[in-house]
Amino acid sequence: MASEKTSYPKEKIRILFLENISDQAVKTFKVQGYTKVEKITKALTEDELIKEIKDVHILGIRSKTQITPKVLEAATKLQAIGCFCIGVNQVNLDAATKHGVVVFNAPYSNTRSVAELVIGLSIMLIRRIPDKNKAAHEGIWMKDAKGSFELRGKTLGIIGYGNIGSQVSVLAEGLGMKVLFYDVETKLPLGNATDGKTLKDVLGKADVVTMHVPETSQTKNIINKTTLKYFKKGAILINYARGEVVDLDALRKALLDGQLSGAAIDVFPWEPEKNGDRFQSPLQDLPNVILTPHIGGSTEEAQENIGEDVSAKLFNYLEKGITFGSHTVPALALPPQERSHRILHIHQNVPGVLSQINTQLSKHNINIVSQYLKTNEEIGYVVLDVDRQLSNKAVQLLKDIKETIKVRALY
Image (tube, rainbow, N blue to C red; front, side, top):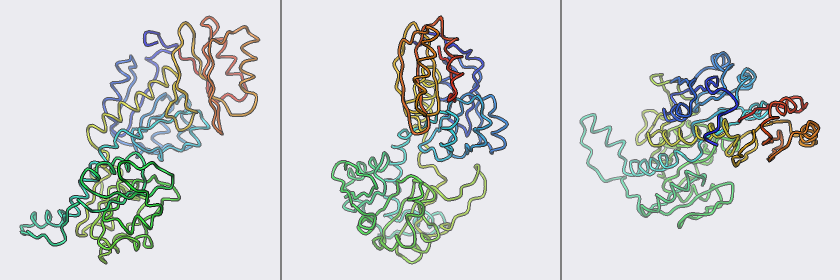
């Protein structure tokens, strides 16, 4: 199907990438003949985005751009949003679903980058390297073994045993650590890792605790003044997950009281809009604390992988109707169909829509070569391959169905 021309002029499709997304994403579309590809290095405010998005068909963002219902209301031509990061918290998924906008992300592409850094931080903190580094920069020689330990033989507690947490588990075992994990869902342990069953159990046994949970109402401040008391005295906390999962004021007190001996934090409840902006945190100026500016997955390899992953998903939807990996429109993995035209129909999921589609096309003697349907609670997604000679008529008939949200002819 790569040799087929699309039924829409590629030069009229506008693609907008924000937040300095990898050039790999731009390249993916340009080599396929899309000429209106624009890249902006910063995030846009809601008002800026409302003005900018009116003629945009494909939007690429990272974690700072907020896609609100107002933005989606203004995005009358928008087909898909690519979140070039792990999460999709920045997109109002309910509104995107209502408007039939497909939302993709890259849940696996920076997994290795985060996992490697967590292991590196564990070594730095358990050896108290931040303190020794600071002293050396200040001209003080601090050659001392007190309070410095090896990771080998220590217990790593992983809160959230998903893509990143499980990979951290494998790397930690390679260094001779024991691994305990806690997850609200049943997960198959890798290697010799053990399911700790309860959060309290894991926190009480771990020498190093690393957070790898999503940001939800259940995980907000899951590490707080109460749960910090469960930690083994002198333990280390690493949060490279989400900013809202740790109460930083409570963590500061636990560090000052000696309940914890160190911490590494990469994500914060509030983060500056752009590089160079002033940053403040309750954890500044504390000993054996490493603060980093949300760079857990920020390696060149990860950004390139994310660029390839998300742009491929966007491209496959734009040209083939494939929604595999979507968080809004139901996920369909579709084979190509020769000698036919493909039409996408997104509609409200109410009884009788598929029957209407088939009845209308049958009435007008439009032959359906193949048909695919997937639904979720809100919407249905039908992909139709029809006779070429009658595809324009088919598109108009589908638009006239009352429950229609979006109709698009691909080729």
